[in-house]
Length: 131
Image 1: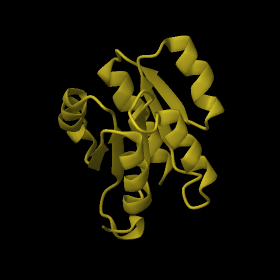
Image 2: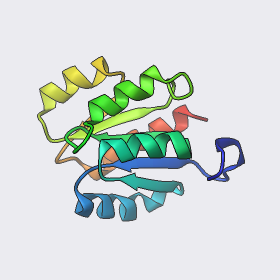
Image 3: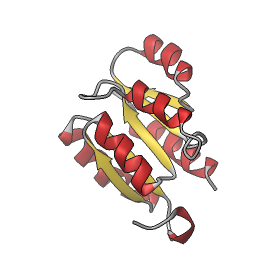
């Protein structure tokens, strides 16, 4: 584990319980020139966030063990993590995601299915927020 200060490039955490989507996103997001760590449930995501101290996080809402909103709430209640940029990525419905994500402290949200160019734009914006 490298601390944020010693990393040469930003680190992004992707958390989603769909391994196929994680694989696709990991490959496609290679254009960002950032490191990527992944988790397939909320408990592992929060553990990795605390260990790896990523520069931004993309969370699926519907994950086993701990949903994305619960992870986001835990991030916001942790003094060391409270300013970490978080984006919710979900297929629960556009209006529900738009209304609920800010309540849990997410900086942004995007709905599945998503346009990859829009996702890329929003992730770049999150990563820029940390610099």
